[in-house]
Picture 1 (cartoon, protein in one colour):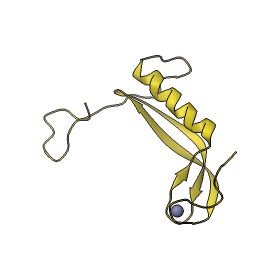
Picture 2 (cartoon, rainbow, N blue to C red):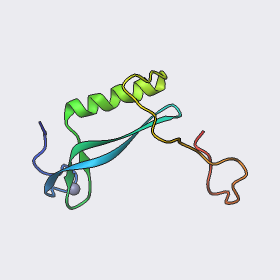
Picture 3 (spheres, rainbow, N blue to C red):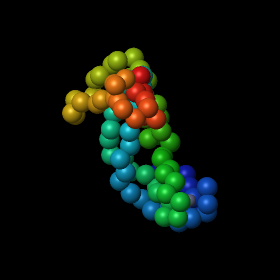
Picture 4 (cartoon, helix red, strand yellow):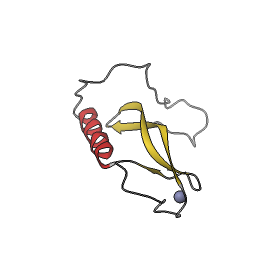
Length: 92
Ligand SMILES: [Zn+2]
């Protein structure tokens, strides 16, 4: 159930879409696809309340290094200190 009929940011028309979401907890990340209402005008994404709760649950699991209901998908990296362009920095 979606709580919004129009975009709360710009008043634009919302469209139900599958979007990719990246969740972080500590240095761990989970990527997934989720149904969201996406504003056709400004691109704002709106999630149902139970989805937001699931996001919080995933972030807290990542933080606590509890990996049940997750499966490994590739590896994630950050850059090292030797990267030549000093405008880019490692995340941790
Ligand atoms: Zn909008």
